Image (cartoon, rainbow, N blue to C red; front, side, top):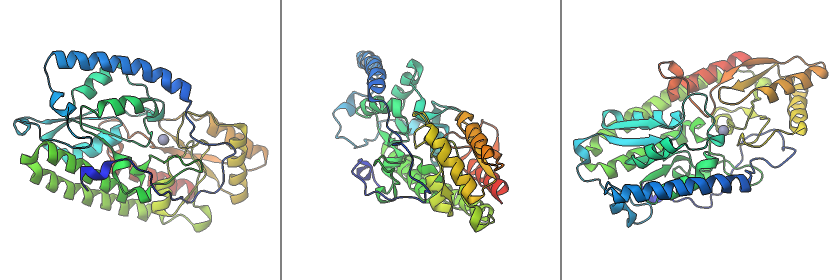
Length: 354
Ligand SMILES: [Zn+2]
């Protein structure tokens, strides 16, 4: 894949196994709120860029670059490449592909919800200092979308969900693209290739290193996917329904032959309605599912409400464990890596539903 494939287009939409239609449209971010935050961010950005240009440090060459083109950075082979990622899941991928050639910064740590995240001034500095920005795209960072659009005019920036095969992007009923592509191992390998391409273009002297790293990263993704599949395959056919707080696992479901019944849509920003609680509780009762799953970066109140609603119908449901959805685990734990996170999720789901 080359950078020319990264242009966001109108993807043909496909649907994952999802058991019901939500009672209200999912993922409709509040435009007025987003505009307000975007205004203040835009001003910070304008001031910041003015300062950067006045100081004569970087960026100006790329101002006039063709949209989407990534030019080699003179002298970059003499230093490490600075990559700023939004989530720690994306940072992990950039570290795998960049290896010793990169210095990766993640704006969001473990337990941070990207849908609801508002950039701080220090984040803007870290984004401005980057040679390459890697982010989720398809509105994963809903409150940073305008900021990313502005930054990508001066710094190479890859929206990973928009850099992969758009024919394989899952859409909601309202047409919104699902950004949680890291749970499809094949798409995540494509995202790795997009990062490798971008790094090779910025730092062509080390293209061979990135190619070697990409090969090992892809092999690691395939191995982790095989391990996860071995866990998930053990779940009996009639119990393969994954109930979670928000709709982060549709790609996992498609890749590993599960069904999902989330309470909230693909963004955590919208409130769950009473009808959503009833819909999910009804699915648990109808399918006789005994476990639901909470998420490390999403409050669990709505899940408690679902459990209570099922109990009111005489159906006992337990919390099967905590899944890593939109953020990987803490540094120093196995779940800090994509592989560890995927395997943790697979084991937790298999134990809860098996
Ligand atoms: Zn999410």
